[in-house]
Image (cartoon, rainbow, N blue to C red; front, side, top):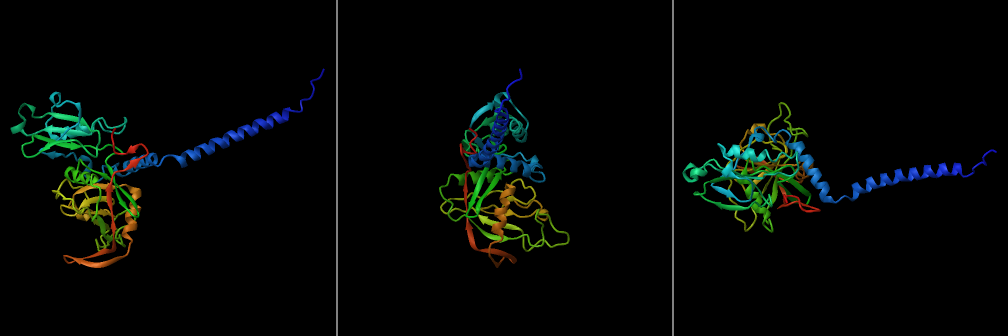
Length: 341
């Protein structure tokens, strides 16, 4: 006996197709909404880490990858991850590199972010050569033990990927700056001091020089062009009212590249370069660099209305209306991005 024709079979296939289409649609919507609704802090962390790697892949500037400096007669505290009594080296740079080796960024958070070396034979005695590797609770507020001429230690800090990034907050957006403690430790500690200040009244950008027809959009010098004016930079000051600024001695000086943040003299005036200024050699102390995407904000400030002025016989352009700024920490949805904890 033949089987009775099943009128519902085509309907069953149609239902299965509709269910499959619905599943695909729901998956697509979920992916889209996950991207849109992801907490802003997470995307900030991912973006900063990616851009930091893009900019610093070559070491952040000629000779910069070889930097490994600390501050003499200065001791940083912190939880020891390698005891100096069991680990001795020949120089502070060797100690610094030992810490950096534990902070490659390939295996999670940095295991070491602070190094302390005993390099003063007169005061160190049998501690001479000790290299203590440590871990801070807060990399942007390292625990200081003591400082002074009689302190036998030299100390430094190391920022891993996605760490040591502060924001210059302006009305046009936040300019994220990666600090370089291995090249300019004293400069970086000056910036860290500003993070604890509740205000930055008086901090501002006041000079703006475009790239003109001298440098291209990548910051490269156009052949046979002059070297200014304009000088392709935005200049400001971090001289906060009521806050004493400690003058910065000249430190390790990578060449000025597009995005470099450097002091004018010993500070508190500084500038952000819009171009690669090989002609300036290593005349300025570079203490950080702007993450690439945020250079759009710097360019926007450089395009604001200016007026001519003359400084020590040099023609410059200053902003008609200075742009206030504030140095602040970066926040994520999980708290402070820069807390190693």
